[in-house]
Length: 240
Ligand code: APR
View 1: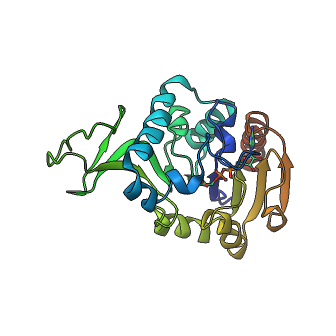
View 2 (view 1 turned 90 degrees about the vertical axis):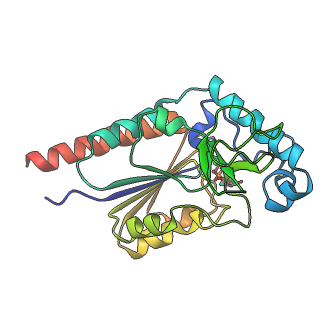
């Protein structure tokens, strides 16, 4: 039997039960800020201190949060799945890695990475970027920015992601609202490839209608159940 090729897209909802706030709360604000005041290149040019402080606070908070059962279940799937698998996260936290995921790409960048605008080098970064730290590669001060993809910027790893979607047999979207493209359009790519498309989300997303199946509930419950089901189905198919 051919092993199904899987692409999994995750969004803020998978980290909600770890205590990381989602983006689109009922008040339309992102931790008290309008998105365009903190998550655009224009905002960074206009008020770098505010933007660095905002991301510094989010980076610092990573030390206080832990992966939840949904991250851990995907880590188990990654370790156990004998075929192609790609986990594509829109999240900038590191909870997938800490939950054991290895075949993982961060399409919107990572909080724990800093990018030097002077020399282009990227560095693992756990502390603050406020206070104009020097780039460890070129020594320039005040040129490091969070290595996250802001509105209007090109997401990372797109060639690899589209190649995986074009080969996929199963596409699963977890905890993402379907507001932000290109990620919200991945379901179309997977459908075009003939993949079965499954959505796991607290509530139907904006693009639920494009999935073959939607299961609603908290990721910490739905994802472990889905992974157990998938591994069991695969074990049975192999045995038969
Ligand atoms: N379990 C499952 N889903 C959940 C849970 C939960 N415990 N809690 C919330 N959700 C769902 C919400 O119902 C919503 O549909 O997760 C989704 C989160 O949506 P958003 O906050 O819009 O997050 P996301 O889709 O990841 O945003 C995409 O927008 O601002 C940008 O770059 C940022 O990567 C982000 C992108």
